[in-house]
Image 1 (tube, rainbow, N blue to C red):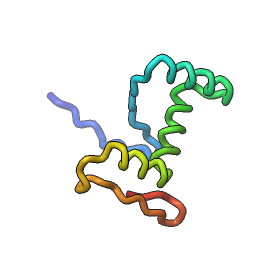
Image 2 (tube, rainbow, N blue to C red):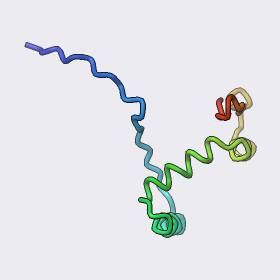
Image 3 (cartoon, rainbow, N blue to C red):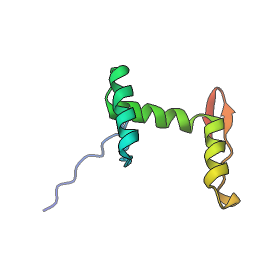
Amino acid sequence: MKIKQPNRKVRSDKKTRVNPSVDHDTHEKLKKLAVSCEMTKTMLAAEIIEMALNNESVINWFQSKYNTNDNYRVIPVKIQGRIMY
């Protein structure tokens, strides 16, 4: 007999795990900067990713370097101070 669990509300601040592999040099830099900023490497990496994904210049730089299909190009737009795409 299967017991039906009540539907739980999804947290608005729920995080999704991303686990990038970085080379030794990048890891050492991340580790030193994290210590300097009194944060964990994971917290610092998350801040760096968030900063990059919300910066029009960084978004455009990555697309100029790596985008090969204009159909998938994202166009960052600032709406009420937030970058959307």
